[in-house]
Amino acid sequence: MVIGRVGPGRLDLTELHRFPNIPLRLPTGLHWNLPGLFQGVLDGLSLAARTGGVASVGIDTWAVDYGLLDADGALLGIPHHYRDTRTAESAGQIRDLVGAAELYAVTGLQHLPFNSVFQLAAARGTAQLAAARTMLLIPDLLTHWLTGSIGAEITNASTTGLLDARTGTWSRELARLTGLDHTLLPPLREPGAAAGTLLPHIADCTGLPADTPVTAVASHDTASAVVAVPVTRPGSAYISCGTWSLAGLELDAPVLSEASRAANFTNERGIDGTVRYLRNIMGMWLLEECRRAWAARGLPTDLASLLGAAAQAQPFTAVLDPDDPVFLAPADMPGAIAAFCARTGQQAPRDVGATVRCILESLALAHRRTLRQAAELAGRDITHVHLVGGGSRNDLLCRLTADATGLPVTAGPTEATALGNVLVQARAQGLVGDLPDMRRLVAATQQLRHYTPDGDPRPWDAAAARLGPF
Ligand code: LRH
Image (tube, rainbow, N blue to C red; front, top):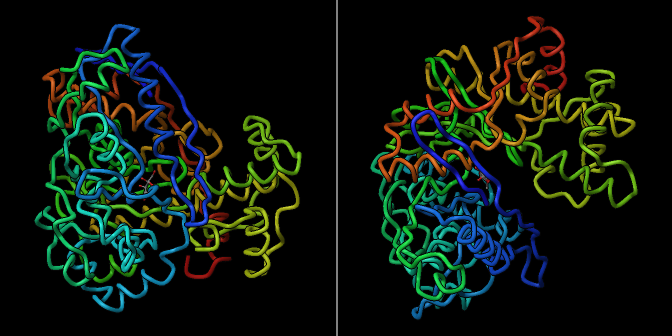
């Protein structure tokens, strides 16, 4: 949790409180420890109260996951984690029932097995869904617990598979076709809208005044990150790189062509009616999961030494397709990488340094493929890449992305999501202007690094060729 300070020529963040987000494995599958996360929010707010208070509060999280409320407003069960496997069948069933082309024509959403619509389909026939009266996406649920207000913030609603990409309204027709009661879907709200003030018991336990406003920010973390991409010229693409790498373009209108569907590009909503035209790439998750496995085996996991070893390692020993479903939730990531290499006739990386290098080169190659496709499908030229989020701290990844794409890369800000969140609140308070204004402020105040490509595409072309039509 961070506090942001915004003013003319001023935009800075102070980290106030950090709390773990460890998924829970229960007999019912993989879940989020949502009460634990809410306690983390309350602890952060209490610290904020003790350090001078706040003008507004705004919550963003990852997309697609939700909680169900019953008729009394009580949460039904513990929200599932999107990496839970229960949608394995329901995703296919819904695609057969509605048709993949029809789904895309309405929602413009990439097919990910965990889109909310598939999760809700997996819940069909359960006592929980029968008792449910309201579905709240995770940031909307946390906001509800703070304020009592009910709403669906639109950037995150656009990841459900139930929002019409053209009209920006819930598709009752899709809800009907997928067997979902559309009254579960709360009224939509735009980023910047007021989401109420703190409930009296929240004010009591945090020490913040009860009239502290809560603002509906761009509550999908990626949408907040895109707000803070310091774009200052046309031809810019972005990569929001963290657990996922979300690579694409900001557009004025969705691209709903068959080619776009086949390439699995998504048209998620950004602020002010913009479209986040992008594709999910399985990001730093591959490295995070390797580190988790290596820690269990007593191997080194310190990031700086891993990246040092990767920088020394031989280039291109093996190349992965990070989008391969085998990498979504393997029990053993290094094992999944070795199996992928065996399947594609490649030598698996032999040590930790080689594995990290292989992951980073594979991500850089996936960045190149995705941005090239985005440019082609949207009919745009890309001349510059902005890499934001935690991954932008990774010097080697930034350099490899510049080399792979053959484009200059500007890296940073690393805390793009928090900055985008704060900027939307600041705008609601009249402290900043429109989107270009916000981005100028980011560009003027945040530390950015610049990478020039080495200009030799051949090793990347050869690496791409190893994976066939990659
Ligand atoms: C990134 C993210 C991404 C979604 C995924 C579920 O944190 O929100 O945009 O696709 O998580």
